[in-house]
Length: 381
Image (tube, rainbow, N blue to C red; front, side, top):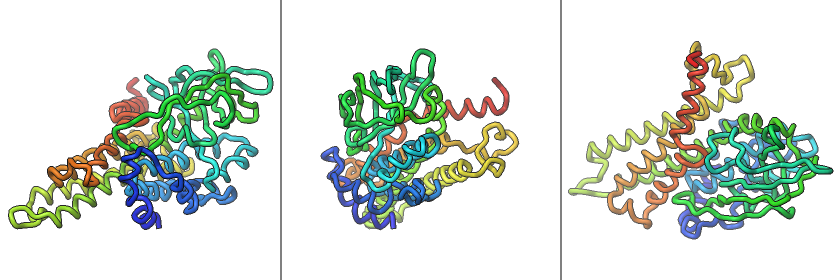
């Protein structure tokens, strides 16, 4: 169903969205109608209650149609829903989760800061206790859907030495302001903005969990964000491969179809292999993350004795983004000069693929994080 929806409703409009750097207003409504915004939300709140593996597979199919659309979907089903289900109060869950599932309320996830390398970097967003709640000041950067969202999860310092707090804010409240829309090389239709908070009032009942523990909450849900980004990368890679395979059958050179040449067949085989390997790693990680404790769940401390648990969200995200960049580049090469033209889809896919290897965390940062985990697991300092 997702593939049919992606092929029929998303892919035909993707080039236009890319050119105008904007998603049509009706697309989020369609996504909500089919349940894509609430895939991870329990049925009791109006969602589909899908497991993580199925959600990632659907996200990948949406990314086959357009990476910007899939990026919005992955944020709602990943860190946003994950955080609310794990740490929001019952009242906040009842208030927000049905709206997310129905598409009535989009929630942004505001964590990023310039120069940050993870949840431990709080940047300049400050939450100050005041009578009846908190006051937010400072900035959050690179917030997906931060302008169109009706609410946002904002991470901010909760006082000197107090750690990060997580706050669920209404974007219509005075003090929340979009100061800049980022123009990107790829994923151009995605709304990625910088936010300024100027004395924004946040009631006490809008605090998620306990304010000093927000950095831990962020680390809990970042794996969901990593895997969602990996699914987006896989969808882009799959689209590039399909376009290249189809073109190589239709395009003739020296009187023969391109697929008659061993060099092209070898390229296609390598592209398919990289996609399959990355997909297997993403799905293995998703299964491990959802396994109950003691039943094969992801446990870095067990890595030396159980190599099968070596898959981590950081590794999976890097493998998928690396596959996307590599496959898209090869697809352009197969198209030849046409691949460099905007008349053909692989040019856009190569730009979109480059974003999957940079946005949220570069491949270099992901490998550093994974290496730290392995180093700690084997006890080498």
